[in-house]
Image (cartoon, rainbow, N blue to C red; front, side, top):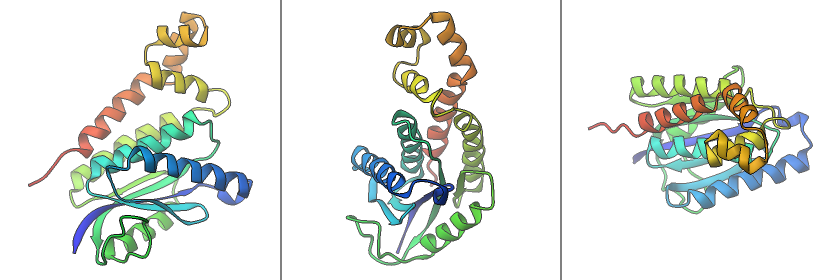
Length: 213
């Protein structure tokens, strides 16, 4: 038996959405990350229920990157829904299915599902459970700060602009690409807290990459 990093997520408020459109968007999001992160996913992100998925990874840094990829894909594709995530370090007691994250059993998977259910009672969208408590707490704090930034972005008003900043970073290049005034793009970059987003993203990746003997 081996311990893995298990990621589970669901769509917040999915019952209130157009079910057919939501499922199409959700499948597109999951399949896109499965392709881009194929080499780091031990078991691919697999939709287990209509609005939930689970996947298995070897280490926490890869899980952090998958979460960030998903969040940025939602922005880039202009999707108007949010995901709630749990990332859990734990045992998988059956052979790991490398083709589809289905049909596996273990304490880690059981706890991940329990934590996801409990998270529905909270305002937080990101929950970590790791053996290393300082690392767990640090990642929880970083993603709380990230959530405060991301959840302030309006899909209709801000996502296209955030997408440009994700690609170009520099406000002058964004202004050129979008044919906007430089001063306006400077202000929008500040208001959208783009610098803070990139800083927190780097910190999350660093903390996730800390290895222990």
